[in-house]
Image (cartoon, rainbow over all chains, first blue to last red):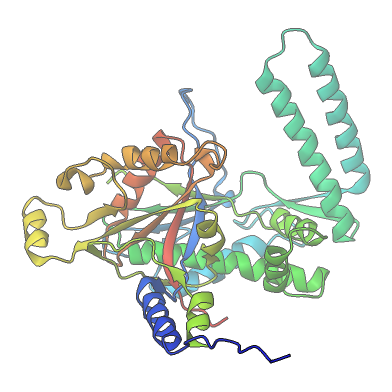
Length: 252
Length: 148
């Protein structure tokens, strides 16, 4: 039997096609990634607040900038914006081990496992009682459920923390960014950058102490694989150093 | 080989803004690529117009920095750059997606790419508009200069 000829494919134009595609991708795509700081805008509420909530000065880490791009951190003028992060770290960590009421930094509460368990069962009972009450509003049930979730989160956090007590920063403690309308976006972004750097620093130190690995490593592993115990680890670090940031809308 | 490299390593441009934006620098940023792949993010630009004639025109009107949003449906060129157009733009983008594919509008991120010199007041004006329509996630774009 005669061997059949395999017809040859003309591949001469393949190089041209590939080249054309290459040029197409060169032109239509970019290399640089979009990097940004994620922030939440508070939800709009209709309720008129007659009396503003009182917050102790020690619980506020205010970073102010005016339209001349001059900086003030906790009522102290700063010339170098690179130092903001150190001040925030100081604000977070000064009272972390021992509370000192004489200084001007946020206080920590320390609760033990027994207290958490008691709180959790009390919240559970409260939720059950609310659900059985006739004509109770949905918001109320949702609120009670949230309380239960908070206690459960604390329980998980302390179990992972592995110490006797769980330090918790005052619930009103927050970082406040106050700029004026004329402040350059560059300075505003710099403040955001410093806040993020400070949060990274304190969380990284805690991660190294508790888990013996860096915060960045845990975060990256979590972004690749959302299952596993990394979520609990990140939750604990977030609980110890919450990123409560208020950006005040400028009036002038 | 080169072709495959470019196909894998790059992402497509979302739009070509007609305003000039030089992002400030920052560290410890979060990467927006995952959101882009799921199209859960809208981009908005704040900068001076590239076209000098237009820049002069708007400067006379007292608007040095302008907004640029992509895919604004049925708006006059003047409208395109005003704060008032944000709501319509954002809602149009949201409603143009099929029902089963879109996330609730509270979870759609609005990424603001602003120029270094832009006044922060604009950012807060945008935030206020977004708050009105319950789009509660915002991202401030910067250039990451940490070496990781």
